[in-house]
Length: 239
Image (tube, rainbow, N blue to C red; front, side, top):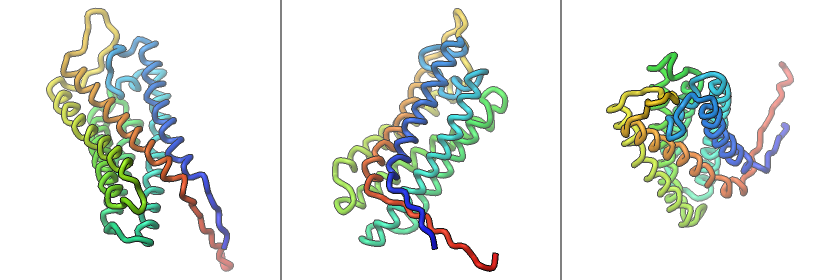
């Protein structure tokens, strides 16, 4: 029996936060410099539609989805271990939260793989899955954080996570409703062409939700510092 230990588990959410922020910002900068989108405020998907930023967007968002799933699974195992020592949560609640989060990561992979203007319906479905499941995940995790208090969490982090969740939940409604009124359009930097107020409201809300996710995972870093992950490897003699 061989064990592989990883003491710096806090690196996982740290890398996720840095990488995902860089993915959003880098594709935005490329898209604006190339004149493919209006500087204020494009949809996140608009910044990854045209070449060359589409390649950057697709690659970085795909990696973000994998890092997100890995972070969620680690969080699931942390809660599971905590719950064994002091029971505070149903096993199914923890599992359902993980499954919803992973489904959101799959949606993110769909967004990265299918461009907005080439396979619009598939891209839009992936985006809806990402945002709806993402908001549901952070809300469930906020509830779990309250349930784990005061044994495993302080009151402060409970309120921080719930505040981020509530803001994200509020923001997702204008994001979807305004997009439905306006219709999904790619606004190029063309003289005389300006996005509608519906478009701007929806896009601003989308950025709020996206960075709500980033900020939420940022709160995992401190908690993961007290965690060690062990990988058990068993070699069969008859192999």
